[in-house]
Length: 220
Figure 1: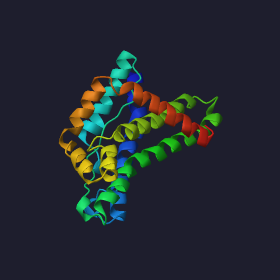
Figure 2: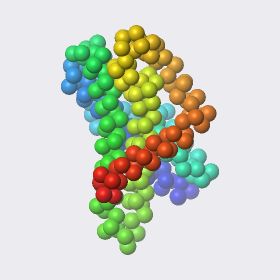
Figure 3: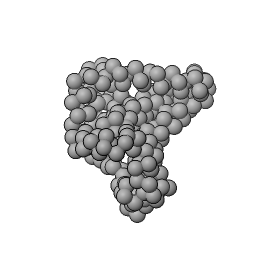
């Protein structure tokens, strides 16, 4: 039981940071491009309580950690926060600026993934003979995994995921409109893809590839 509690604790910090900074980044970039909606509602903040969704931020990641603990699986926890409100109509150039607002979330996760690897690179050699070494290593590993899975899932080109909004921004008018019509069903499509194992192998390969790239640029 103590190991399960430790596993949950070691996942909690990186998962909450990954989700919180992801949402805050959307609001911050939206404000840069002319939409202060998130700022007006107090959502451009690093306070996780402002972003936590009881199901997506707490129950789902916790359930995945427990499943891993009892089954031996190694699936990285993922989830979602309360979406930061963005009024695309208030952006200075709504269609073009949508790309940058949507990309801000995954970009924040990539930066966090790099930082977790840098922390591991700087700290772990000095902790090689310290009892805290394995704990810090696990925390950094979870930070890398949580941010990569959140980044990559959000880049799937299905609205309302960030990748879908990026595609709507890039596609010409009619094609963009047709893709945007998927948005009410996007979450259900994603769940179906995840549970049918269609995405598992491509996601794992993408995680491995991005992690390898991060190790190269950080010297980790």
